[in-house]
Length: 337
Image (tube, rainbow, N blue to C red; front, side, top):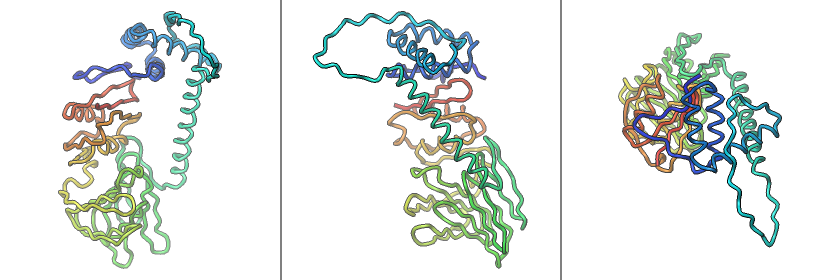
C-alpha cells in the first residue's frame, strides 16, 4: 500500500477537534503502512502534541483488548495520562465506559460493511453487465446497438418478445442505438424512461435522493417520460437534469461533451462541488470523504482528468480553497471551511 498520510503541498492538515476520531484514523494509517518511517514520525508527533491524544490512543488499545484482538505491530505506548483532580459530585450518574464507545464504532463499521456488501451482491444478481472501478466497458447488444458503461455502472438487458429494454441499475451509460421503428429502444431508470428510435445519448442514474439523474443527447431525438409529470422531448445538443418528484431542468450541452467520461474527462459546468466529487468516486478504488459546511454552496466549473482522481481533487482544492488529505492509498479527505 501507500506511504501513509500525505497532504496537498499547498496546505497543512489541521488537527481534528475530536481526538478519538484522530486515533481511529491513525489506527487505519498505521495498519496500512506499518513499516513507513515517515508515518511513524508523524504519529509520534501527534501522540505527544496533546495529552488528550495519548488518552484516546490508550482507549483504542483497550478496545482491541476487549475485542480479543492481538496487539498490532505498530502499537506505541502512550505517555501516562495526567492525573485528574478528584471531584465530588452530589449525584453519581452511571456512564457507559468511553472504551466501549470505540467498540461501538468498530461494530458500526462492521454493520456499514454489511450494508455495503449486501446491495453489491444483489446488484450482481440483477445485472447482465457490470463495470469495475475506473473501467469503461463496451457492450454490443443483439440488434447491433452499443452500450458503453462508465466506471462502477450496471445494466440489465431485456430483448425478449420483441422488446428492446435496458434498465440502468447503477451509474452511467452511453447508448448508440440501431434504428428500428417497430421496436423502440427504451432505457429505464429510477426517475424516468427514455425512448428512442435511433440516436446516441448518455444517461446517468441517481446516486441518492440528493443528486439528479441526467440525460444528454449527442445526436437524434429521445423522449423522456418521467415517473411524475409530462414527457419531454430532447434533441441533439440538449440535456436534462431530473430531480426528485419529477422536477426537470433543461440545459444546452455541446455534443462533444456528452459522456466525456468516455475520454476519461470530467467536465463540470457551474455544478455544486459535491456533485463533481460524486462523479469522481467511481474512478477511485477507495473512499472519498468530504467535510466542511462550505462545500454545499461552492459551485465549480472546469475540466479534470477523471483517470487521476487524486490530482483532479487537488486541482479543485487549489482553485476553490479546499484541502486534500490522503491516508494510505485508499482514503481521501476533501475538506473546505
